[in-house]
Image (cartoon, one colour):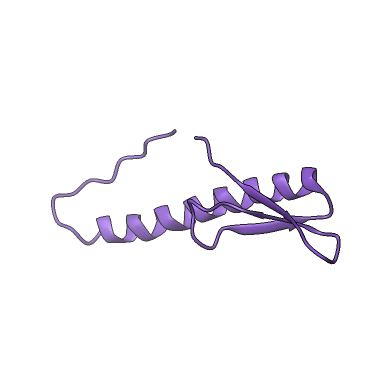
Length: 71
């Protein structure tokens, strides 16, 4: 998957990375490289958490079988 990320240089010298497509998915780093590495981890964590919420809903519905699809 491809996500667009916004980088912003903060006043304290850190670089803040935000993924606008995923509300609240924000990270930072000492430089752009570290900020991009950290936002990748944040995106993975955000997607995992959303999947876990969806999975808990699927288990409640009768006749529904959860299937894993790797993207």
